[in-house]
Image 1 (cartoon, rainbow, N blue to C red):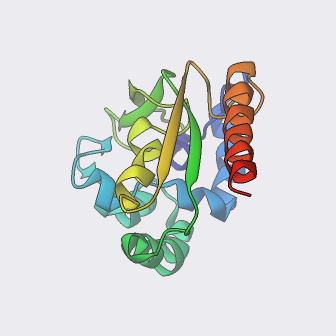
Image 2 (cartoon, rainbow, N blue to C red):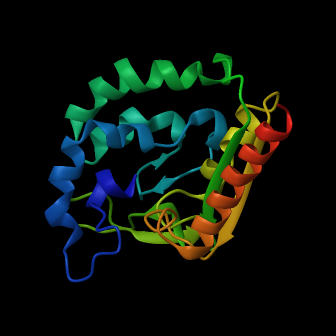
Amino acid sequence: MLTFASGNTLGVPLVDPLLVRGEQRSAESNLWLLPNPKLFGRRPLVVTPNANYSAFEIEEFLDGIGYPEGVYPYRTRIKPLVEEIDTVEPPPVPITCVIGTGVDTAEVLVFENGFGDDRRPDVVYGDGDGTVNLESLLALETLWSNQSVKVIRVSGISHTSVLTDETSIREIVGEISSVNSYALSEK
């Protein structure tokens, strides 16, 4: 939600988030990163003096921040699929997901003076990988509870370094080796 409200530099120093906000809003794929109402419920994710926005009020949030162009694609593409995500059959293969944890990740945005073109929120941080919060990272365990799912948490690893960090790579290679060893032993 931070990306749409005031831009997100993804940790790049000396860049004003407002400079990248327009480009980030134009990438429709960012709409897929908005919170799922089934996971986040009605708890406030954005707080303003006049309204609070939960995952159920994404359309109102997009309109409120001055991005009405995002409402239609969210309503017609993202929302219908998100509403049915728990009816989708998981793949019939074991899933391993390597995630970063222990990195401050935005959880609640507080706009003390409301929305405005140049306003940035106070951010309440929680656990995650710096981009995706822990609740979203672990959602596949809940959504695919009847599926073989293994989540490997790597502490202190960000979203952008999970595929380059030595510890993460060791975990990934270890999982691949384990699967290959098992497959070879079955022959």
